[in-house]
Image (cartoon, rainbow, N blue to C red):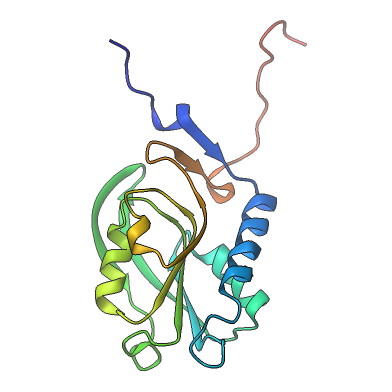
Amino acid sequence: MTDPLLPHEKGFHVSWDQIHRDSRALAWRLDGKGPDDGAWRAIVAITRGGMAPAMIIARELDVRTVDTISVKSYDHQDRSEATVLKAPDADMMGDGTGILIIDDLVDSGKTLELCRKLYPNAHFATVYAKPQGRPQVDTFVTEVSQDTWIFFPWDMALQYVQPYRGKD
């Protein structure tokens, strides 16, 4: 019997360039899909992972109203119950009509499930989607396997790595 892989052993490393390209691809898929002659009223980023993609998408789609919803569903790499720590402006949100809610990734779907209960008419988009959470997403760019851990550039730092052979 073999030991299961640790999260970092089946990793998908995403660079700043890659998240920028993939976020622009998501914007391209969302362009013209809003209910107001194709436009969106506002973008809400799910913090913290959704902030970089939301900024890029807001720029690409020329959406000036951007807010955040803070949902905690992880404690480091362990999933926990999703809870709202900070909600977006209630008057702006309504039932979510015309609102684009952006996150970097849907994993189990618990974060988006909670947001969908709060804003049932919002459009939910993520850059990456895992199969378990995919039913909660309206639009995404890339699907990855459920057992893949995605390493985002805001979680990483460059450092020296020893070569396989030798010391030089």
